[in-house]
Amino acid sequence: MRLVSRTNPVTRLAAAIVVTTPLLLTLDWASSAVILVIELVLLLIAGAGIGQIARSTWPVLVAAPLAGVGMLLYGVPSGRVYASFWLAHITDGSISLAIAVTLRALAIGVPSIMMFRGVDSTQLADGLAQRVRLPANFVLGTLAAQRLVSLLISDWRQMTLARRARGLGDAAAIRRFLGMAFALLVLAIRRGTKLATAMEARGFGSAGARTWARPSPLGGRDLALVIVAAAVAATGLGVDIALGTLHWVWS
Image (cartoon, rainbow, N blue to C red):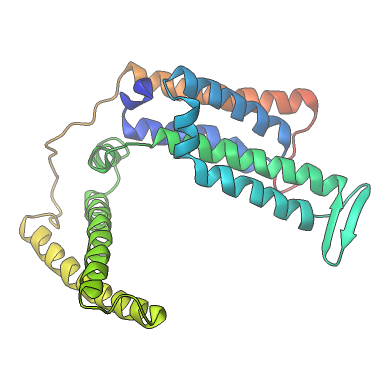
């Protein structure tokens, strides 16, 4: 992903939106399959290996077939019935729907994860504030909250080790979880209050124009990425129209 890593995080977000919008508005196998194949080819060209893609997107690779199985069994029945038991019906319609849902989940999830793999949250916040013109207070507050998540994970790990050191970590799992969750909640509230006070003291709540220490530039690579994303989306819709399989989600 060397080529993609050199682009602005906001550009990656825009490219992901451009590619996934047709997939969210349509429900058919043709466009999803075409877009997924093109996305995989582009990821390989960008420097991502098959193993890297599989390791990074394994939750999607597991969840997409499960979603397809749900549609296969409980989708709207139509056409020839192959099997039927209680509420589950396997028909031509449910098979087509299952394939479409599986391919669509893969076409949306795989590139989205790969595009944002390794994105620095500070650079993304800078881009959203400077390029998208989102309110600075909202962006900075969200960034601060995201930074606290990693601290909460570390706090949970430390509390677990401390309880085990005192001999309290191997019994009453439910009571232990509730107690640790309450302690973590109290700690999070205290830390959040201190952080809000510190940010207010440094002028983060002022209504005036804000300057930024790190610029968020856009260049030719960013434009090329958006153009490629638009071309991929247009190709998927074009194949749908050519094959006559275009099916909007509301129809």
